[in-house]
Length: 106
Image (cartoon, rainbow, N blue to C red; front, side):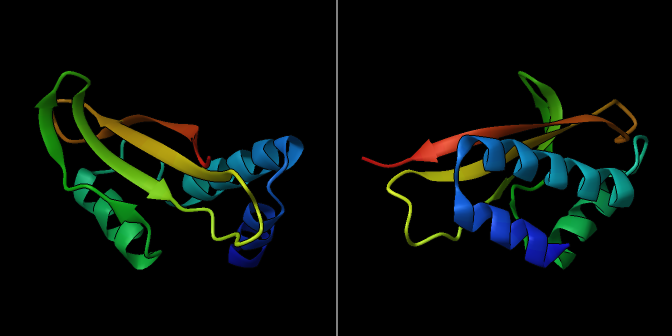
């Protein structure tokens, strides 16, 4: 799965962007089910070496963990990273996550 994700990040076109987003989503669905505790989400992100914030309580978006999967491509003029926002309820249980592309370039 990591090879597939890396390959799609390298290719960097619009249809690839959507397939990469789908691959990330499937990866999280399998590993981090809804209702998962925040410490388990942090442990998973650490185990996958995904950059992330600490557990942030009572932000304007509620309780969240913010993460980013970086585009490793060296050949794209515009790099597409994927930002992920994990949102939690008052009992520190995962409610949902949202994946958004983030563009970096000239």
